[in-house]
Length: 197
Image (tube, rainbow, N blue to C red; front, side, top):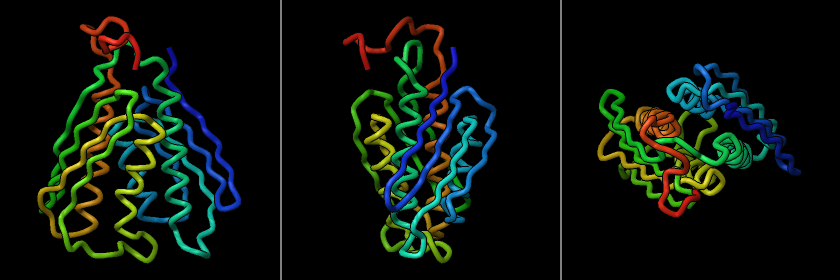
């Protein structure tokens, strides 16, 4: 069985291509024009062991918002497509990942129902590099969750450096998703009493 997703999304603001293989080896080819966001997507692919290709051309002459948002939408759509009917997967998973002084805790349910809880330390620096607005992290997860149709809880109880705080979240998300979509030999069919996810 091949668990791959491919989405092309075009608007007047962006052109996005996302390809993902859930059973890959962490090979990543990412170019959005937003350096820090590329770095975060690379963490997602590498630590999730997903083969991930992302190519985005956006209206960066305005700002990075549309580029980041539309990429996250397409990523969620591709992830959902790759999951198929979800038969045999673990469904639930969590990961706690430290990055120096920051700790990120992520819990995921590949439930078919989008929901996000996102908690970060207050007083974070507003920007990472010249293009990444740190308020976009929550919006990335909102966009991903609503299109992938997963329930996602992200909690960073402490951290000081904004780069570390955000990167720890993407790494923890990667590991939680990797475990949630893994096949469980004890799961037969759809992992739900409803018979569908």
